[in-house]
Image 1 (spheres, rainbow, N blue to C red):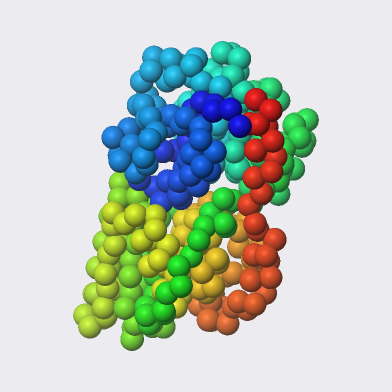
Image 2 (image 1 turned 60 degrees about the vertical axis):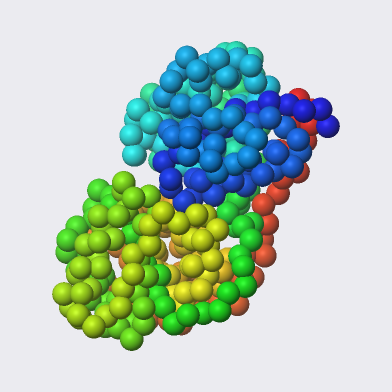
Length: 340
């Protein structure tokens, strides 16, 4: 296979576990094949420190970005939920601009295992549909994204999220509960207190490990939750984790008895680690995952009912059967880059 050049665009450099783990999967595959990789990152020094033999440039330095795109063979946009305007319309425009630049400069553009939407603005829908129709290869990670693109006249491949294929080490359970929280629009002191009360009532005899995956968004909420637990029960054991590597996060979560999590990829790690999980519904992608695997889901703005009882009695064998269908397929992706 001839060596090719790739520019990778995504939510990279922000030290968010899910996006960094997807980047690791993608870089590993491309480097195994002997290709050159450049990553557009908010923190190029951090990104370069994670990987050997790649280049990284500031994603917001548009002159550098455009120069690197002009010299590449492929632009890859993904994974995660880049093409949505709920977080920010400006964010959607940025990732569409990278796709447009790749197409305008006659590069082969790949949409890699993305969750598309929600896109609420008419202009956002129009621009996204118009650009994705011209991409060399489009893959999505969920049925709703697949159906949305089909309705726009785009023929994507439906894949699972790459993290479903992450390797989980064999670790012993350690009589602990993992709780992963983040800030979001509907996060409130009331919810933090209700969650602390439920966790204390059910798990006060265990260590409560609290995980910040992206400190700028997660850490303050994690600290508030730990404080709320201590106010309820001064004897309860808590520990806040921050700054862990992808491998450390996966290993730590796999050794928990239960995981209570907001972030999509924290829940996936729980599922593939055969840990019973409870989701906190802050985003449609978490709701989709709950619907698919049948794990309980609590709402930020509603009182809890029987979700903690359902957490304890999850059918892990049934979840394991569903996971058998979640092997990430590289075939079409490799075919496209080989032809290029």
